[in-house]
Length: 209
Image 1 (cartoon, rainbow, N blue to C red):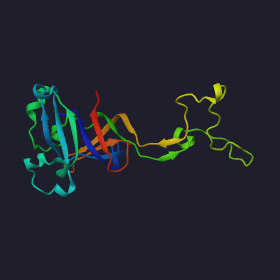
Image 2 (cartoon, rainbow, N blue to C red; image 1 turned 135 degrees about the vertical axis):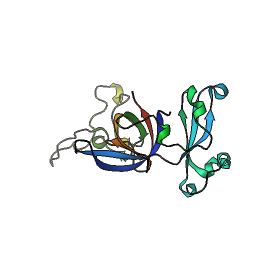
Image 3 (cartoon, rainbow, N blue to C red; image 1 turned 180 degrees about the horizontal axis):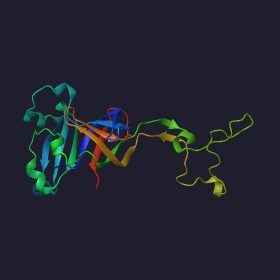
Image 4 (cartoon, one colour; image 1 turned 120 degrees about the horizontal axis):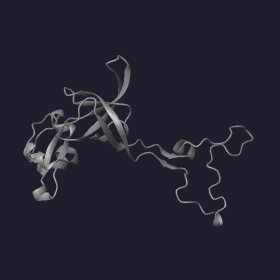
């Protein structure tokens, strides 16, 4: 059984829990993943499976082992998942993964990592949450960062000072997110709260605990 998987962020929606309360959830699509290579401890020094996601134009075609020699043509993404040595014999080349191969169940806590949304070049107010100065007409401060070299030799700026710059578009990890629902019919995972990235972002989901 796999303790981690890769999925595509579809967006957000709402579900009702057992107490009939609305819960905001993120929808993660997990389907069209095929085992493209099996790595064993005896041959490679560690146990893992390489998985590839079939491209949309090839999803209606019948899978063939010939695809494995042309991965760039048939798979949009190829990733690797670490497994236990005892699970090496449970996977076969060309096997399509589904939720029966995953140890994650409803109610479990998961850790989700992905690339956050890029916000471009931003000032300190949006990038770091600075309060900024007064908005009155006489103010000379407004949204500026303020002095950055006070009482330093020749105006030296301390390394790590929070300044304007590129905001977002970096790897972000959120922990202790609860799995609200798993729908194997449509191949979707519903996780409480928001997850990193925009629509179609590739996410890495790992079981916690």
